[in-house]
Length: 346
Image: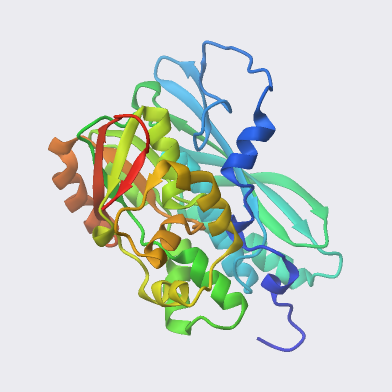
């Protein structure tokens, strides 16, 4: 990078989904706000879901979401791609197809115009890859750059997925490895190996479209994307919303190896501690080592989909997923809630 080019991550205090307000704090902020009823509002902000869903007709529902964050990469074009892929993911997690997007952007007054152009181009290219359109947006001046999208998509009301439909006996599948937050934190300090970061950037720019397109052809009872709250934070929301327990086989979870090494050294994002504070009272850690627990709480940016799948469909879905998403993995099961903890690590 030439000396006169700005390092975007140096302009932000937090990176990517690690900047997300903690789940516990968010719940307290929303507490007491009156929820208005509408029979056509299938999913609203009173749920811990990825997007809102509004029924338009018997065979069509509108899916809406918004997501933006500070730079997760120094390259503006790469940052734009990652932010767009992350925002689109919320629609995929609901089983929907994104169609229209609006840019949300904040830029410092002295940010080079070429960098702003590249950032927007990254977002546009990723949205077009998804088969959707960017039709406008809004931008402001700010000391820290931020970028993301408001996304509108569509889904059949009867085929909509939420994070609250998991059933006892379901199999848990995850489509991307964990450790993105740890590695991007290390990269900000110049401590992440370049080959590892190349893989991380590849994961973050990979749309969850391929996973969604396979998923909707199988009996999936619940789905969420694993982003800022980490696997255990989003898993806890699924368990609570579904009234079940999750059992996670830690040995089956795909951790990025370099992230494991860094976690053992104590290189951890601030968001990991927020996620642990939110979820740990509901998690039985079993024999999981501390570094494994840290990566299970690690905030992911543009992470994978966590699915609760009918056991009769699990093997077929996993095989089909691996053809589209090689990193797909089987990580556990859903059990009846017996009171007490909601997630058990084994």
